[in-house]
Every structure is written in structure tokens, then in C-alpha cells.
Amino acid sequence: MKIVMKIVDHIIALDHEGALLADTAARTDPAAPVPTCPQWQLRDLVLHTGRVHRWATAHLRHAHPVRLDRAGERAAWGPDPSDHVLVDWFRAGHAALVETFKAAPDDLDCWTFLPAPGPLAFWARRQAHETAVHRIDAEAAAGIRGPEVAAELALDGIDELLHGFMAHARAGAVRSEEPRTVLVRPTDGPGSWLVGIGPGPLTVSSPAAAGAQADLVLDGRACDLYLLLWNRPPAGRVELTGDGALLDLWREQAAVVQD
Image (cartoon, rainbow, N blue to C red; front, top):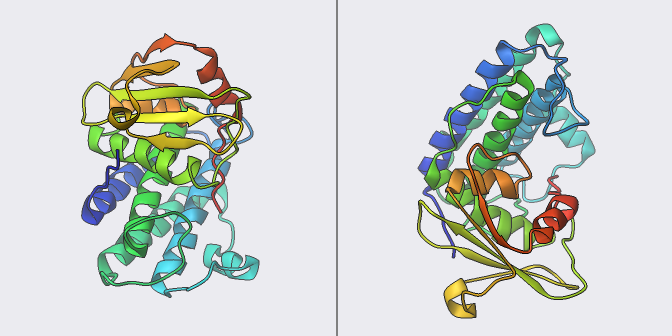
């Protein structure tokens, strides 16, 4: 199943999720560990997300036809902020990205790295989910549970993760010696995804086309499946039917690579 939100809805989600992330960071110790990203403290998470926002803004604003090189990335990031101004720095970059999207022409042409209807659609979708997932990470560092990810955004994010990153070599390879299947089945939204794991590249197909049988079935709300597949603890219950070892395999091997 392919789920694609409208660009304007991705921009609204990006605006909302970034504001939540900033608000959480503003009231949390920047040295707080991030349980969902064990190698990071909160300052590292905010710095990373702020850099990604500036990186995306540079590609969009200047319509770069190829990926920025290292010097271009450093120029887009600017100097690293101190802890004292870290959240203000993040807010400024986030706001600039949102405004850049709003001002961008529909026929914008620039570099992308995942399939999409067009560059603007790609960047809006990618930045909405980049920010939503890291908002969850910031809340984990703060020891709180914020608002649930909206069902529409979660469904769209599952689709981006499976059809985008996992099916197009933008992630750590999930492999199994024997062919296995995982059915991802939201209980509060349309559609589902049948994920094929084997010795070769991961596949994603329609359960209706491939038959409903699977070695592992994941049933749950879209927001919980979204977090589970992004290797974040879901807020609610996800029902597992079948071989739970496949979920362990996913957790061990699925690692998104974002430039």
C-alpha cells in the first residue's frame, strides 16, 4: 500500500513536531541521556536535528542539483551553538525550513535520495518524519510521553520507512537465511504492508496481492506500529501473532542511514 500525504500536511506536521521537540528541549537538561539513541545526550539530538533542518533548507532554497559536499554541509550548519542558545538555534533553523517550504515553487527541482512524486514532496515528507521521530526521542530524554503521532502521519511514516528506506538500500540490511514474511496491519487506518525478509533485498507488497498469510503479524494502532518499526517503544500495545524472533531480527538489523 502506498500512502502519500499532501505536501501542505507534511509541512503542518513538520511545524507541529518541531515545536514540540523545542518545547521539550527547553525544559530538559541538555546532558540528559537519550534512551532511544543510547550514544546521544539531548544536546546531540537537538544539534543533529537542527543540522538536518539546515541541510534540507540549503538544498531547497538554492535548488542544489546534487548533494552538498562536506564543505557545503558545514556552511549550511553554521557554527555549533552553546548549550545556552541551543534551543533558540534549533527554533531558528526549524522556522527557516518551514518558511522555505511555504515559499518553494511546486516545480522545484533539486537533489533527493528516496523515490517521491517530486523533490518538494520528498523533502516535506522526509523532514516531517525526521522531526517526529526525534521529537519522540527528546521526550524519552525528558522522561515524558507527549502527544501521540497523528494516525495519518504515522501511516505515511510506515510507508516511507518500508517503501522508501528499507526497499531502496537506505538502511541497514535486514536479512534472513530463509524467506520470511511480516504483515504490518494498522487497526485504525486503511491498508497494510507485507514485508518479505530473506537472503536478498527486503520486499514490500500488498497482502491482498500476495495472500494474507505471514510468519509474523503486527496488529496495532498506526502510531504504535510507527514507533515499533522505527525501533522506538510504542505507547500502546502491538499484538504479535507468530514468530516473535522476526521482530528481534528487525530490531537488531534495521538501521536507517540518512545523509
